[in-house]
Image 1: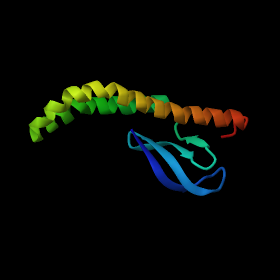
Image 2 (image 1 turned 90 degrees about the vertical axis):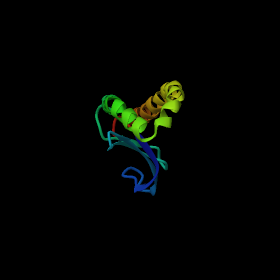
Image 3 (image 1 turned 135 degrees about the vertical axis):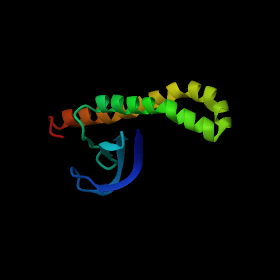
Image 4 (image 1 turned 180 degrees about the horizontal axis):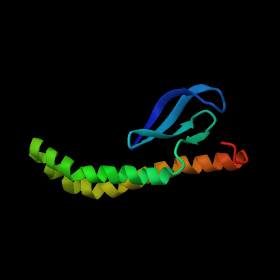
Length: 116
């Protein structure tokens, strides 16, 4: 998962060229939010399902990644306990970001009578 915060795009709603936040899941653009008008576009009908797929893909690659890191830098194993403790907070932060995009989309949709 990746959130790009400095993309300059022209908003299709307000017409202003300015900063947008872009949400990428599984290396695909899934949502954008205009910093000017706050409109959020979700390019997937099921953003939570897409996040779950992204998380599952990253989890499936984790054992290989850990093994490669251990072979390249054996000292990297020393940081694993700290990473394990901090991981739940990181996942919670990710879920909050995904939920914020969805909440903003739903809020704007209700404000405009479903026209988003």
